[in-house]
Image (cartoon, rainbow, N blue to C red; front, top):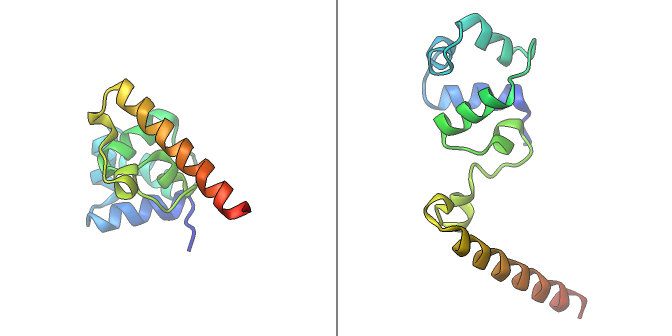
Length: 108
């Protein structure tokens, strides 16, 4: 099942057995303001989304319901934050080559 923002916010909070007020403290807002996010009365801005993503250790895309993958470590087993920019570029090259090979194999 694909979740949207409202469902994800509630799911993540409930997984940690937290109340809306607990998350509000993390965000430095009132509990009612946070409740408005879960009710979709207001949408969180990018700063709030980033704080939530860091707190829950998930991607912003996961919170928004764009993907069911919580974070890239879940898929790759890598913590990209520990890689240098050069290492990340090497990983991108390898992934591109892998995708091209898969595409050729599929077409071919």
